[in-house]
Image 1 (cartoon, one colour):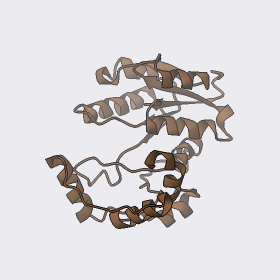
Image 2: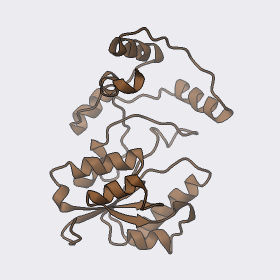
Image 3: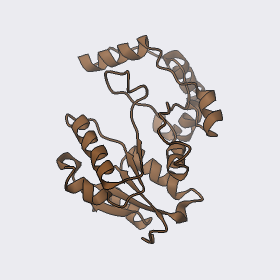
Length: 230
């Protein structure tokens, strides 16, 4: 991939992970791919997934995010970037690491940061996870003015446990039963309790209309990954 500065330089943190790789795939498959210069920060540039990205034209930048500092490691790698995607792994240093990355991005003059977090993170006391498509994240980089300073709740479908088991039964052709499990630890219990008590919902239809998204339903997801569940 050419490094001419006529291209927009987008850096993806965690490009070998599920979220980061999905963002890279969405950007590379977009019509604007020729105008983009993609790079990812990775701890091990010799890893199989990293080398696969390199073969597709993504620059690999070695860095250990557990040892990041604003004035050195992250700062120099972000200098000159037009956009930055951040998706962090859960760790004891998550908050400290996130602040360091964002502060470094500001200091380096990065024009746009897209941060992937749990929905309603400003209210939620504990982390959670959603399964979603990443085309909207690619669009945030391709149309930065439209998505400037927005916080967008993402979800592709909504159903309860019984509806989910019915959907599995329909697709797999065998009866599936939903049973509510007890949380494994206190933090998980508090997270589940908060979700149940705080109307943790996304208006999926409004999301599709507002951002022109073709979201994948749970049923379609199970169909596409049927071999995993059989």
